[in-house]
Length: 131
Image (tube, rainbow, N blue to C red; front, side, top):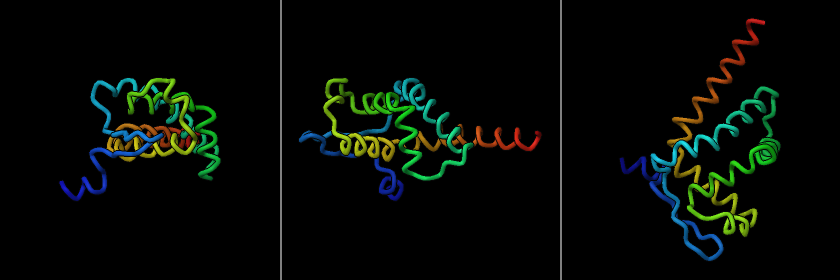
């Protein structure tokens, strides 16, 4: 178990705007809200994949353009910070926070998000074959 914890930490402490924030895995009671905000991101990733977009910068820009509010909500859920605090975040701090959230919650994203993306891609491929 210790080796896994080195790869997927139970929590990460990062300094944002002079404040140490401890990012922990989502709690069970947060999952419905997390899923609500993650679903549009999954849908957009599927659409972009279907359109053949693979460039990381293009993917990031498209996801932020269409799902930016959901990303902010995920940061709010993970940090417990209010909107006023989030409004003061610089771009680098926002990306740092999002990276830490994904890192600590990689288990959630692998178990919940990845299967949804794979399922959608498979349905798309089946639909293309049957055309």
